[in-house]
Length: 536
Image (cartoon, rainbow, N blue to C red; front, side, top):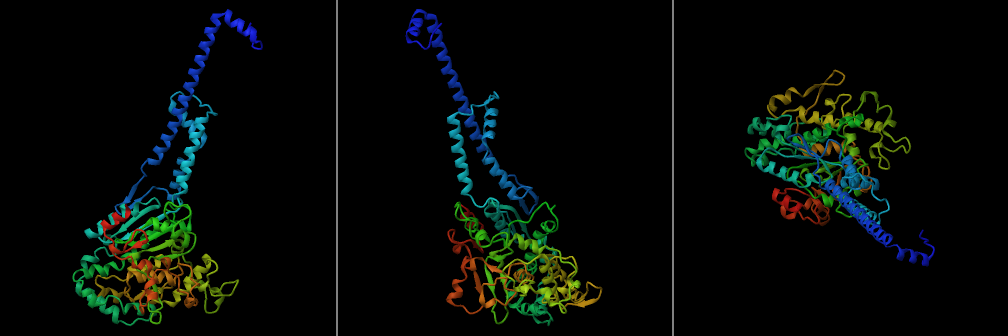
């Protein structure tokens, strides 16, 4: 027997027994070989886990089309998609070990205390965490509705939009509309130039009892302007309905979410409504790969606040018409709460008697007007009462078209589509008398005499679809001061001063030469070629 506690005995025994010496050498060599095999297997497993993560990260995004004009990222919302990507890119230690076992082909459990493997796992997770931290807000969901025409140049622009900012990681859904999606889908072919001239004359000369409409229609469709367009005048006039109709199309997909929890398409955090020649610099809007910069939109216009933002706000001459609207070519942004308010069904307005009970329109805590409330959001009930009160003012002739249960979006759509352009000389006269909600005949001296941008501005400002801006002292008593300008971008139609010019900001990003990739967030009149250049 070998006594390991005695050096003398150990030496004697080894020297006197050469067979044991050879056996021990063999045992040592076998142990070294076994250790090498374990290390190699461990390395193979670690490499396998890295490859698995890379495959997940490089896998193409699932895409499908619901129709020829719509692109979806997935059938679920982008938040779920992003969460699953983050989960896939951040496997737990147990998941990595399981992947190692699957890749070594032996089902052999890896040594849990292998220092090299643990070090590689730690470095890998740190790198993935860094990549996640430096990316834009991954839970932000953006939908885009681009409004154009079926002309080849317009189709090319929308194609370029889809390929550039429309394929940004935050964009869940990119839709386009043309004249073929219009309520009057043959307006652009059936509307004659003499009919255009007739509509221009009626809109600009006919008296109406609706004060806001009267201010707008006198400046609508000026014939000297349309005459210069020649045959294109018909298409221009028909297109005035397309923007609000397209907005309604987008909003309809979110209707169920406002009333139930079963909608397949929840409202996005932000909905962008824009023209076919609009360009969005998503890095400037939502932030580049900078953990300390979430971009201007999520910082200044949080998705949980009721806000509608014009890429370029146009303000009319205040003393003539205190009214603002978005310059459509620079886009309009709707936050999630504004979308939900847009599609909220309005109950029975006859249940409210505002003449006898003015408290219905006051804040119960401060006794201040609900219409200029700025320190807290409106409740659903308060919003409904304000809408019903606004209907009684009938400022553009919309009250006769309202039915209980409609949303503001429904009302806007009814207003835009009620008066047809084709055969307007007959149709408008026949539809001046409408059946009221109580069965009575009501007269509306209407006709559709509003520019598409004015429609958006009217319903956003007058129907409380955006929070009241109480910070501007000059407009503190104007309840219609609701539409915001992107980062204060404002085009004033009045006197041109240095201050007014400076306030234009994003409004100056007009045409290719003015769309600077470093400073521009939103640009108008951008060519497909320039869009591709800006995206690279």
